[in-house]
Length: 251
Image (cartoon, rainbow, N blue to C red; front, side):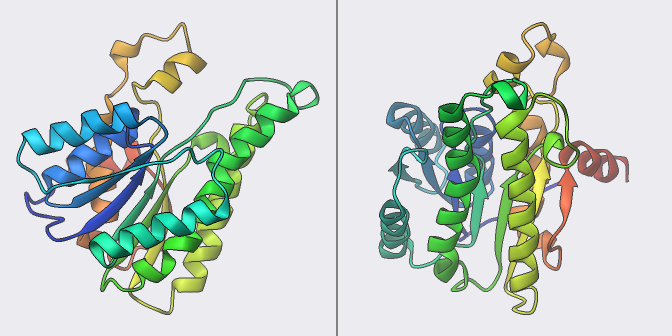
């Protein structure tokens, strides 16, 4: 089980921090001692997470409202500049913001939706990582985690832009991990949360019994492991949250 102060003195940026897995991650990271930088499109949602962290007396978080689907490269550089000014460096970057698009055959897929999904899910992850790498390299032990999906590891019909963007994230993670492997201070991995009780999941599987699915909070030990010191030396791995939890909780 994660130590109570596992992430003490760490600064971790979380995208899509307003709800779902991103919200749960932000709260879990703060609970274990991290100063969390909350990035998302909807300021009101981020403010609720901010207030919850403050109410519980955890390290003070920071707010960075930004629509990643519309942001230009300069906006990502501004994010990095703001983080450097306020925190000096980054110890973790959790990519979680995502748009599932539509379940549609490739030949019928709407181009505008395709571009939006690819911009938010893949291009934004690259742009933010690129901007934040100098801050991550200032840390003695930094971790980048890309939230992906099983449809990004084995192609499945009708998953369109979402599936392709997840394949792209896996490739981005592997290339980045290979590039930083010799540094020893920075690592990159991907994590597939699996079936989790989120609004995006409900929209994609409207007939599913959500009560049978784990909550976002239930898979947080996997994120805490990857973003904390316990995962030093783990680099370039495509991990599954449920496999991780089954292994560690059965030991």
